[in-house]
Image (cartoon, rainbow, N blue to C red; front, side, top):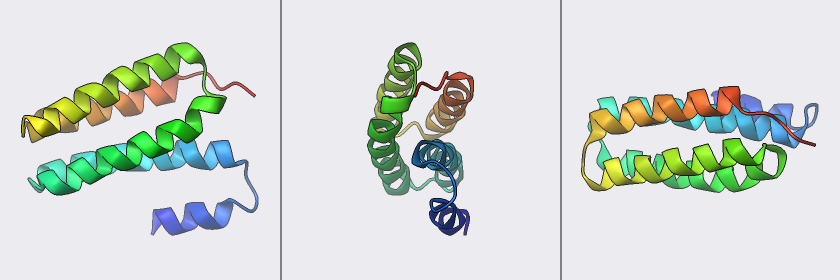
Length: 105
């Protein structure tokens, strides 16, 4: 439902703001899917995060983008190792990185 609300907000808010909100939402989904022990879903979450990352990279400071890239790589590794509890923690860390990231215009 939140995804749909974000789609509607695109008419009224900058795309970069919506993409950052989407990224945050998908980092939370990692935790949900990891708790359900659904490796395939977590893998899909990571792929979605990587696509959204490409969109937010244009409006996020380069240091933060590097940190996001590092966390995404770590997250992908945790999923490959089937370490879903660690993947959930990495998803939380990724959300924190984005929250602290500076926005450029």
